Each structure stands twice: as C-alpha cells, then as structure tokens.
Image (cartoon, rainbow, N blue to C red):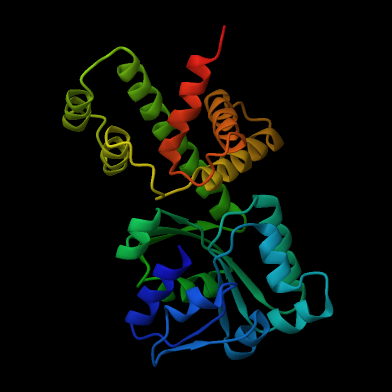
Length: 282
C-alpha cells in the first residue's frame, strides 16, 4: 500500500523524503522529487509532516524508537500521521505520548486495497487536532478521492474498524455462498452472472466473485492482513461489551486459514478454510 500511495504523492509534485525497511522497494520511487534516506530519524530531521504506513503497532514503536530518548527528539515540532491500522487504544496512547513531547498526531487510516491505492481512490478517515487534520487532508488529496473527518483520536480508527467489519463479513458471506453453490454442483458462471446483475452487486463483490470463479488467489488484501483486522475488531468489541457474533465467526475462520498456512493468499482464499471444515469428518 505504501509504495503506490507514495508514487501518487510524488506524481502530484510533492517533494518527499522516504525511508523503507527494504531499500530495494524504496528505490522504485527514485525521482528528482524523492530523496531516499537511510533511517527513520533522517526522515524526521528532513520533514515537518511524517506519514507512517506500517504493518502494526510493534513496527511503529520500533520505527519511532518509542520509550527511548530519541522518540521525543524525533516527534517534537512534527505532525505524525498514522495511515496504518492499529488498535484504538494504542493510537490514543501514541497521540498522548507525541503531544507530551511537543508534536501533533493525526490518525488517517484508509479504506481500500492495492488497486484503489494505485488509482489514488482511497477513502481516508481523519482524527486529531483540527489545524493539523486540515493540513493533512490537503496532503492526502493525491492519494485519496475523499477524506472524512471523524473527530478526536481514536475515532478514525474506530471508524476504520466499523467499515472493515462490514467488508470482512460481506466478503466472507460471498465466499460461503460460492462454496454452497459449488458443492451443490451449480453452474458457477451463471451464479456469478446472477449476483452481478442483482441488487447486492458492488465493485468489491464483482471483483472478489471473479477471483473465486477463476480460482485466482493473488493478493489484493491478504488473509494475514484481514485476520489482523478481524482480531482488532473483535478485541475492540469485547472492550466495549458489544456483541459481534457474525464477526466472531469470521475471525475464527480467518484464524483457521492463517493457521493452515494460507496467510499469503487473497482474503477470498478463506474459501479453502471453508472446504476444510466441510470435508472434516463429522
């Protein structure tokens, strides 16, 4: 996700200073407007606004050197933008820690996978101090078709989890529907034609259904990432005493898929976990 997002920023004429764990990936951004730096600390020295697109909270803490004296030196006077997905509790704690050191923090998780990222069609959810949020919203325009302000931290991440709850349960339901049709010996092309022509059709359902029919499990959103999101949703629900029975079942299914070695497949690869359940001796 980070690479196409950064490419769209560079194409807009923005000057970027970039660090990535893999220097080979970072070199794909090389242009007169992009400077590849050696460390996260170098990026913070060079930039007033620093965008983080990292896998999880552990990676964020490592990059920010949280708990070390360098953390305060890095974030002081900076706007730190978190575009990844973490727990709301972690984000709220990071917001407090950055503000205590004289920095500002903006949540900016996005809805969309690799294809929308490449097309600059992501939807951003923003939370934080109003002047900082307004500044970040302008910076995100080359990456996002829309940026919606959700309120104070951690409301943007809670919104992201709410949106992902619908996405995950919808695609899981589509996979189970496909599995039901397939095991009943139905014509899967006609099954797809009917769904695509009906009132439930969407850009996501059409894209994922085509992958199921073609047995194409190449990654748009991986099982490992979806399982992380499903776990975060379930944990946030338990923390708030909210019942999420359908999401709980999806989380169990994606966890089984991950444990079964399917983590690097697209999320529709959860079909294979469904097949294992069906074929399991009763």
